Length: 285
Ligand code: A2P
Image (cartoon, rainbow, N blue to C red; front, side, top):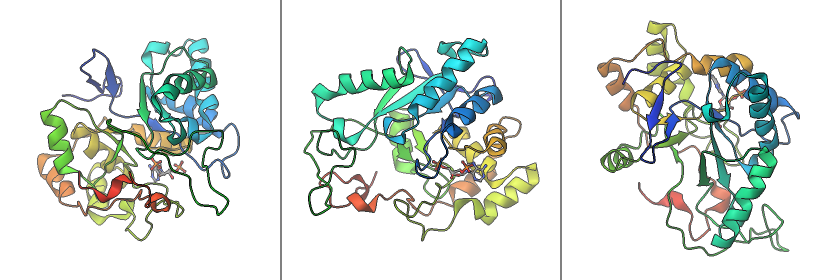
């Protein structure tokens, strides 16, 4: 498959297709000024991104919707050019809540549809107004669900997921890899004792050969394996940098070298929910 800035979609079995490169939009709401997400999504669309990954729980979904709508109004894009993925939050897992929650998301976005709606995490919390419900002792209040669905999978050169990827290839399932650059290293939910991916000597050495950064090499590696990536950036220079991955390609030898970096390092451990009966990260995938 030849991948270009204009054409890097993977076909899906329902006739739709998903761009291999998307913009992630999670940033700590306490530390991110209002409007940053709006501007970033607009810059991304101008840069050529056509896949945006968002969620209700990121508290900025209204800005994502506004950016998409403004770019449609400008005539830069049509709605059908954009692939938007939204997510069902943990407090809304009971089947009867799924549709109204999606409808609420559409209202927030002020769009008629989302292209993909996935389960944010397979760990249900007690339904209600509190997004992170806790009891009087400050303990999270969980909820029982019967979950038989799949969800996004962390995937990058330190966590290459060979078994899962092979299974998905055999069954024609497309993987979306979150944190393809190794996360923002927010210590409240990330295992920061693991080495930072972008400081890896092999990624940097390969990057030097092509005048690319370690981040660009990591992203190119994933899309060359057919893994969709959604690196978040709200920095205009890095939003553009992350899109400049269609003007070089990695040799088979380099792909193997990067595959060999796998350390089974899962950065997103969400240890604060490790006592949830459905905590997913003790299982092997
Ligand atoms: P920033 O928004 O300041 O660019 P995620 O794991 O959610 O995709 O987050 C990726 C993290 O990596 C963000 O903290 C983002 O910060 C940072 N980042 C994004 N692109 C690059 C890049 N090209 N080089 C270095 N860091 C990056």
